[in-house]
Length: 302
Image 1: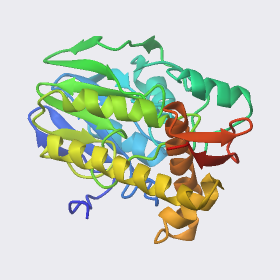
Image 2: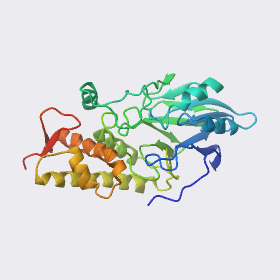
Image 3: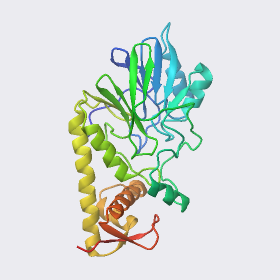
Image 4: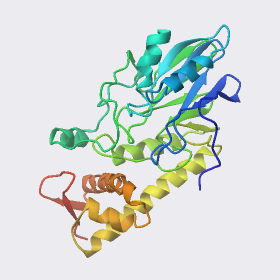
């Protein structure tokens, strides 16, 4: 069960010195209570993940500015519709540049680029027009008055996804969330990359995670261990479902996610497809014919 988390949307809540959070008014089965927007700094502020296009949320961010404060950086973790679009409206008001890894399709793995060229489209809402004013590469450090953020490229949930290291803590956006595991939806999401990014974060010692959805994560190592274990359990379930014979992602999803509401089965199917593509890349399953969303997969010979 997720940690209790039900802050009022639109109200800036102090999480610590120089850090506040504003919940966007976009609750849904995929965003839970809504998107967390973070304000970092005392004078020159970084706005991390401005959120969905919402006049109310834009006004809430601007209302949170105190005398003597200005927005100097707008940072977008990835180009999903619940994180990126308000960056343009916020920039129009405050003039701050928008930082991000790259456009919506940046950072895709070779196999996902191939699937996209073959016609596979994303299952999540993508801000296809997103393009940062200032692209930031892995390892780049962004500086403001009294703060510094290390860019950590964490593809998986989306190819252009970044986390941000800050004084031993990390803004993890949708890679590590405070309420559920992250959806990995090809061709924007890549499970092989996702697991590599999890292991990369796990190799470091963090004090806490500030996720894109849900409560602050006070035990990052435990959460990452759970996330990795959860994915390995799903992988085992997908392989077990193929014991009976070849099957498509949608057929496997109905078996593996048997207790999932019908409205979320399409997203579950995307997750299963991500696992199947990862397993196919590792030669643990075979695909019958060309690889696409409706391909049939079978267990490789043991």
